[in-house]
Image (tube, rainbow over all chains, first blue to last red; front, side, top):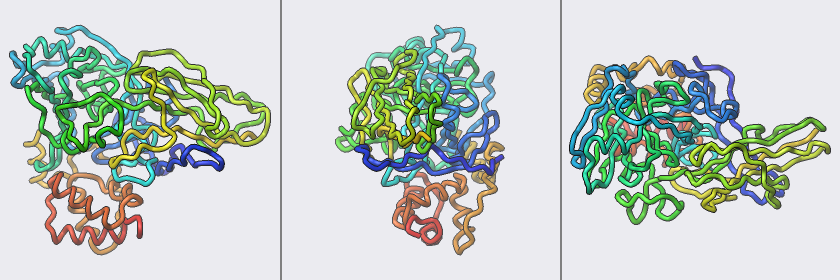
Length: 391
Length: 98
């Protein structure tokens, strides 16, 4: 199953004279295919962690069979969608329910949202000095059209009571050992009741792939993928903060380091849960070190996204970050989607091009030129730099 | 789901918990004292490419911290004596400062 071909992730070597800090390089890893998936960059076999290659990140919607896969725990059931039930309960629910997939589809308005699903630790493999964890390159992310029902509609139908503080989500995947904390996450009630938060059962018009959460997963547009609980089994609404390892001890960042939606019930003075995706961009047309044919048309293009304010501008520098100009933006597919950009490169003269790209969000946030270091290597959004050469 | 996990663990089937992890059997850890124990303990919960992928990141002190994390936070069934043997193996064979 493992291709012997070793694939090199896009490498980012800093170039001389640049004012942008030289980032690290993502480790190489073989391609391998999970059942139902095309060969992806295999980071770990079990639990399965597979990254989308750059070549599969060039379409507006990332293909289901190329979408990245991320699990913490290795007992992953292959769920019979007909037998599946979603439990809705907790102290703040007046009418506990066990809903089938048909119940969801028939009982509630069907809605869709196009949104980036991005692992908190995407690009961890580029962080210097390096930090432990899955050594992701650029592809622990993708953009898809998610379809399902609003979480808030389901909670209200189940008799949501006043005084609710958090909603906790548990998936059917589990640890190998009973001593390992089960993967469960929570959202503050305010966010859980946002109209864009979905219990999704379709991805790009197809049923969710097994490895992306079948038969239904949570979709929390704008927030990192740790909250997008797969194989949803149990939703509990409580008048108190959820107490679980994956909220209290994992997926946390130093308090005040990243401006983002607050999570008061889970914050301490030292650390807060990671929440919103930070502004970012990715060049998909070229990789660092690419050589361009003199006189041949070449267009630098890729995507930019943030946590839901939307992309205001994407700027391109061709002199290592000294001067910047606005790239042309593509179709606006909604604030939670990524947005395309393009910049035609001048290839009339031979020589180096020190290209760099930075996105600016509508909330004013701009990609930084140095890494915002944090212990777990989250939120890597350093300006991407590519040393190109016209020959 | 915890009951299923327990059954898998007790019956020793953890390594074959799913058909979906084909490929990991091809990973061969370096032959040195402690390898068999390392494989026996670590591979209960995860494929050992986790070791390879973190080798450039962790030195001996980093491995010690990681092993303690596996025991204290993730409940890995590793005795103190076994933890020392695994640390000696990983520190010598899969350390950034090797």
